[in-house]
Image 1 (cartoon, rainbow, N blue to C red):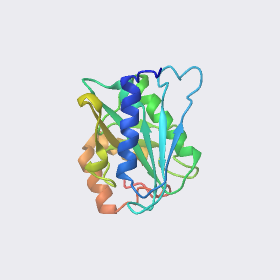
Image 2: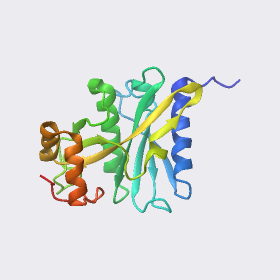
Image 3: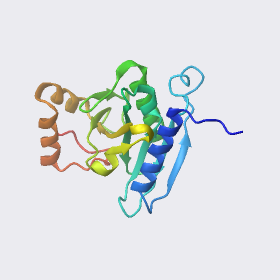
Image 4: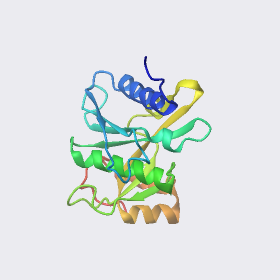
Length: 196
């Protein structure tokens, strides 16, 4: 006798299928992430999908599957994607940190930011994550329909500097994005200079 799947399980599976279809031709690894005994109740089935370079993009992508169910409202919730220059456990850990922060009462959304508490990678000036539209991948990745009429929105966790987050607070998200465009930042470069 098979167990009936919970909505959270079906949602995570739908997100995973969506990511695999979007990144067809890429190697996609599913990593079950254990947040540890104190935190696992918050996100018991968190997975991070690790997408290798391929025909769509030559960078690595890390996508959460399991955030949606932790904070969904009316069948709508968020998942997150981060793009990086290499495959590294550090980025899996950051995605788990982001998921836990989101679920732990900070409810991230578009144009929000989160402090990392240390550089994105050693030597990087980026020590925050800015939640933005997934410009590198577009709306085809962003919008993920779920079983039962629900919807997961996959937003980008872009590493930024403290000065950039302060600029965004003072001048707005679009003003910061204009600076990014003018500077032609490479978002996967951990050593890029701050635009402010």
